[in-house]
Amino acid sequence: MRSLLVSTLLALFVSVKGANFAFEDDQLTEADIGDFSDIAFGDATAVARAPRDDDEPDCREYPGSDDWPLDEDWSRLNRTLGGALIRGVPPAVVCYEGPAKDEAACTYLLRNTSSNRFYIDDPVTMFSEWPEGDTCHATLQPQDGENCTQGAFPAYVVNATTVKQIQIAVNFARNRNLRLVIKNTGHDFVGRSAGFGSLSVWTHYLKDFQYLPRYRVGEYRGRAARVGAGVESWEMFAYMNRWNITTLVAGGYTVGAFGGWMAGGGHSALASKYGLGADQPLSIQVVTADGRFVTADPTQNTDLFYALRGGGGSKQSYAFFLHSVV
Image (cartoon, rainbow, N blue to C red):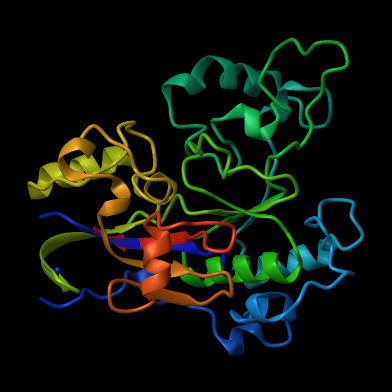
């Protein structure tokens, strides 16, 4: 079951649980769905219960396939998202012949972006070229026959700032048989921010943070922090300094502090003393593959909590983190 991490509660070393972040209080309801069946919730038990249909497609839909959503479908999705849908245009398209060509913009990509946050704050880019296919790199002198193509850049991106938008994206992708990917900053080396014909959920601006001096869950009693999935390591370093705390995060300053880093194990320079990043979550709030917003911790949804912390994740138990307590 695919799920999307909203936030995490991480152990620092909270007597009552803190309230949700504001973005988590805006959730999808049946009234929001109305007659738009493409964003309806799924049946979490259906996959385990139903045998495979021989007519079921072997692949996800892609631009040009028979069941790829029509323009009006994307327009309706965008309206439902409150205008948060972005067409996945590769930034370097400005370097190639065509209506988007802009030599000044291309020169900027080549000369300035290594010293600013252009690519980190871009909704489409990812930093590993090999899973994308290197189909549209910045160059002032394209070789003969070289052009910019979509490759594994997402076809559309949801700039997620509420749980509701994430639920809509997850439901739309599932109901329309689309590939779904997740991105914060795009540092994911194994390519989970890339996908041909994909709909991407961009968690980059889910940057909420709350220090919790006292927290209790399961057998844990102590300090903790509630963190959003879009927080980067450099931002966590600042919070550590402010509150005189230590949390495990990625060593690279602009790498997402949680989400894919934590779900992939969470290696750091402090691992020999404190363990892996995946060892730290006390409670994780996620949107699951059926579009539901749930909490996983030692007392509820314990199997999901186990999977999210590295207990045998697979295509049936991958998570979209929204917030965590650590």
